[in-house]
Length: 292
Image 1 (cartoon, rainbow, N blue to C red):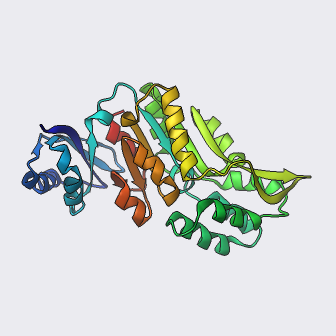
Image 2 (spheres, one colour):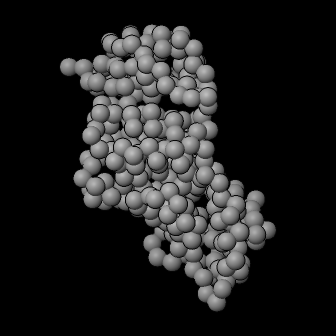
Image 3 (cartoon, rainbow, N blue to C red):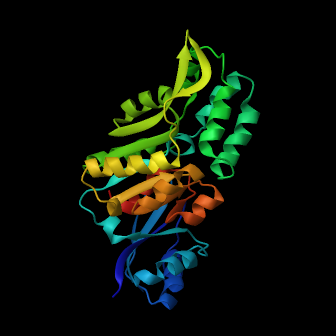
């Protein structure tokens, strides 16, 4: 028996033929594609249609849609799209915000290039995240605490981040972020956005200087997934109604546990594993997946 999905197309500009092209890719798989409706604004366009498709052919359908030239395409299960209450959880660095905070900190130690290379390898999944984090944080040893204030001022939210969080809140849904970055940077952002949950690492500071160490358990891919499960349970939202968004290898477990895992400007391995991908530079494209 066919399952119900929503087909969501997104691009800076969508021509009417985009929907027809997407439907043509799905028809050989036995999919029934309904009429498209349009949304979006002057930044990007959205077209959405209902799709009836055998669940066993979902992977094939997503692969087929990967060949669509006119737009990015996401197949969103009805369990996510139609849920009365949803739960959104996001990564922070290069997702909620535009930068990698560890690199901004390392710039003050004259080690940005060195740290950026390690960060890139870790996000591709080539290095153990916890080990790579400890190595990168060691480069910060001796920096004055005031550097954190300067980095905090330099952090920029990703375009659409505030709109996305606000839309979920207006619809009565909780929003969380979990980060391999640092609470000293994240906490003010979380308060500004009125996030329901957040978690990150703590930089150790002694006598007004960074020690080059983090305090407590490192927030790695396992902790990210555990946080999703714990917070969703607290909200009484099933995992099938959760949306997780991230860009790096340490997000993979979290994306896999959610009903919809979204790769945002992600590394190739993350794009390949995720249920949907967004390459437009606007985080609020994600709101159209869950109809909030």
